[in-house]
Structure formats: structure tokens, C-alpha cells
Image (cartoon, rainbow, N blue to C red; front, side, top):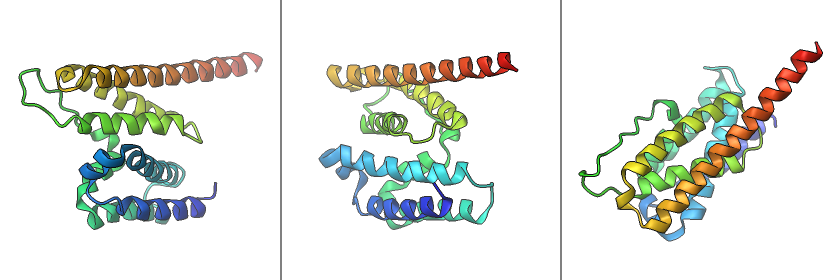
Length: 186
């Protein structure tokens, strides 16, 4: 996909995402729609950033587009930060004695990362490694806050995380075996 087209798609989905209203309310009323919109914005943002030179005009335009989302709708700032600095996210694992947490702050990002992997059009190794790391960290956070979740929700999230991590592992194994076969043929 040409970068210009990806930027147009990013603008379109960014506009739709800005219109969701309050993030917590949007998640509680229609979580699937909210996550779909977030995933689309994230997908096109990552595509542009990963396929352009750092500090290029297109790179800055993509950052500007998603930064405007948080400006236009401050309740989405946390979700935008997940896009801008995923590897720098400090996922703090709270002990069981900590006060109750908002389970959406754990389940929402997990579901969006899983959705991103399931809907990924181009399998970028660096991006996948980043997602794999984030899923591992959220899995730890989920385990440490198990008592905050209803048992069926907790188990569903754990099953989804494990299935996605297994999918990533299978793909990496396949990629590594294809690479080794190519090297042997040389």
C-alpha cells in the first residue's frame, strides 16, 4: 500500500475514533466497535511509521494525526499513548493487596493487541516482537489482578493471550525454518 493511501486511511479512521465520545463509556456500551476503531488507527499509524524514514514528513504527519486525536478527545489520551510509545509502556503489576483496579485498563489493551495480530495485513518482525512483549507484560498484570476479574472473563482473556502468543510463536518458527532452508540452499 502506498504511504499516501495509508495516511488517508489513517486520517479517516482517526476522525471516526475521535467521535467515540468518552472512552470509558464507549468501552462499556460497545467495546467491539471501540476496539475496532482503535485497532484500525493503530494499524495504519504503525504501517506509516514502520515504512517511512524516521523524521520524514510522512512520519511526522502520522504522529500529528494521532496526537490530534488526544487533543480533540482527551479521554482517548491513554489509548493514543499505547500507539506512540508501546515499548516504553511501564506496565505496573499491582499486588493482590492493592485497591480494586478498573479491569478495562487491562482487558481493553489486551483485546486490541490480539485484534491487531489477528487482523495484521503485513507481518513486521519488529512490531510483532513488540506486541509479544506487551502481551507477556499484560499477562503478568492479568495474573496479579485475577481477583478483580470475573472468572469467565479472566479465563477468556488468558486463553486469548495464550492463543495469540502461540500464533506468534508458530509464525516465528515458520519464518526461522524458511530462513534456514534459504541459507542451506545457498
